[in-house]
Image 1 (spheres, rainbow, N blue to C red):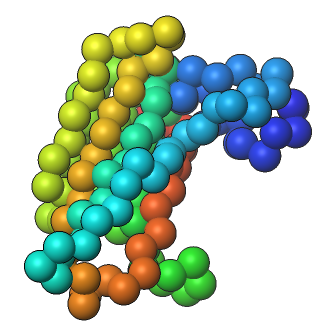
Image 2: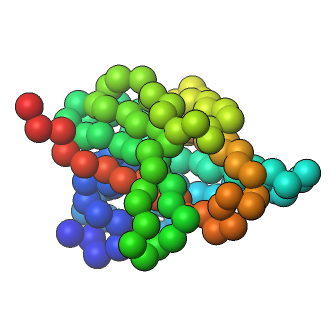
Length: 130
């Protein structure tokens, strides 16, 4: 209801308030991209609620296009369970200790540059139904 452009379910999952605008908040951020020896390495950062909601599933996803291309799952977290890294391109994943009410996570993806000239990322939240 705060009209900040972030879906309310995602705001709850990242520990933000769905009822107040948070202009400095982000769900998923690009930390860096480097290309060396034909390999593209991308580091992403996300923040999740320190006390995760048991009925929310978070997925970090990647795609080669924003139009008509499938989104591949890189990592997933269901409720209070630990993150599961599911993408073969994920070189490293780290969940840091809680800070300021949220849990920072970083994901490093490494792919041959020729196989993915463009890469798009998103953090998606969905409701877990019993």
